[in-house]
Length: 488
Image (cartoon, rainbow, N blue to C red; front, side, top):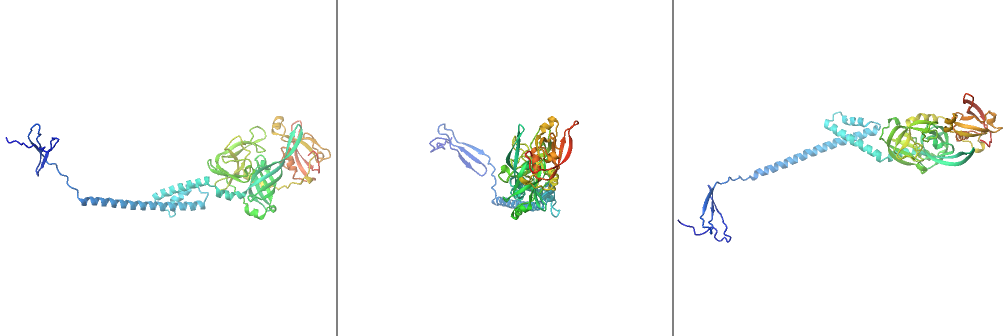
């Protein structure tokens, strides 16, 4: 047999098999070269041809690319138009909401949303209704945040109606039957609540003007004017003082304003509030917070001091807030976000034992009392040389003694000087003075304060309690005040 003496791996230094492929139209021939070492001959294998994948047409790929581009453009156009439509609708609705809110500041949030959803022409579609509702919620949230964080406009509008109140008084103390007096001063705040033909009327706390020998108020422009007590309610810790219009400069009248009293019954817990007052006597300052609690019952004595003891106390309800109420804030304004006075601050309530808890008298409770006190006749203090005197010495019957011994609270007469109006009226040791001309008297300070408005020679009506076998009996006596007395 014919032999192939020429190996197929000729020239291959590694003597590896190098297959030779022959491709024909109907098949594929593969030749394995003879390995020079084992002398094997060539072997031929026939393989079926693999199907060839058709080549992609260039024109088909271009159509798909073009189609994708067109779809992208159309999506972008529709998305842009939709976004613009929603934005426009939202802007229109929000504009309407703001107009309605400014026109009706007291409208509820739910009413605002309802009006926004109904639309101006009543033909807004459901999708636009959803946009309007969302816009209303966003606007309401933004307004609430602005109220809490930015109160400059409210303060600017209300500050002219808040004043500082300065009180110079005579403090009296008793030690082993001897009375000692000393001058003192205190500061507080007040709110301008009205004006009549001759006076500017200001409400404050009773404890701010208690035992005052001299009162003055300082207005927002820094001017200071003398004031007089017009009326007070010690149990409610309220008082109204008056400033004569003739004593106020025209420029000051232009700078001040009368406060707008709100409705404290509409308050809700968590509602933002603003406190303005003469904190620490440094001048008007502002603090903010929220309503922490409503109708907080606290037992308070006639001097406005928190008191949990039994006896001469009355349980009143207060607004509790975390807005700082410091000494000097008493009598100042607690405001809502509209700038309406919804409470009269009182630093006496709560004291310094707690932090982050201030109290205010609800304005809806105070309004009837304020209106009554505003109608009282203003009493002008008499100078020291013309002041009238009773001619007694007295001791305070405080609430503790009143409860312990069953005595009415007032001024216990310990002695009566001869030749005085008190002696002529039949007052004797042991009588207890409880009122002068209808004004309640619970201490010697109260009695002296009332007498400071009456000149010598004036006749006053004293309400006294006289002891009897059946207990104390009320009696009214007329006393003509004398010129000078060493006792009273």
